[in-house]
Image (cartoon, rainbow, N blue to C red; front, top):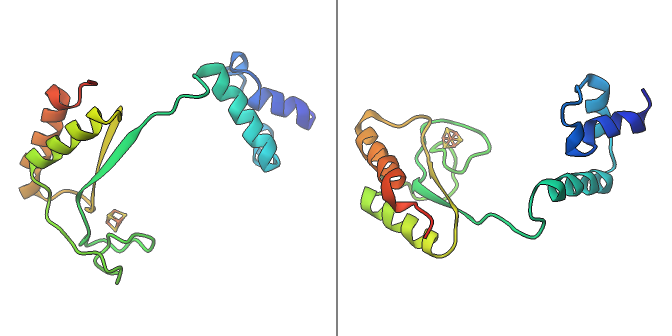
Length: 142
Ligand code: SF4
């Protein structure tokens, strides 16, 4: 299969979405010049979504810094001198209030990040309460 056919198979219209991927097709995509890849991606995006609409999302750090893990790239790790001041898990009411605020400002997605490898047992009740409250009422689009 020549490169153009591989590209058509890999990146053609969504009507060809059932086309089987193989190593050559994936390599052809990988090897595309950046602007060609951008053009193809934009074409597929326009076939499936309103081209001029973007999703507004908001990320809130509900527990910042002091993570015991040592991920080399992460400023939240307690192992690095990032100057970040570690904080405890945010109160549930404050997380919900922030969610309402960003929802009312037009965000349609709300993400919460916490500097943990995994939550501590003592934090689970609060985390569950946040998720339940958001699912129940606070995060309904206005
Ligand atoms: S917050 Fe996540 S990425 Fe950062 S050090 Fe902890 S486990 Fe690693």
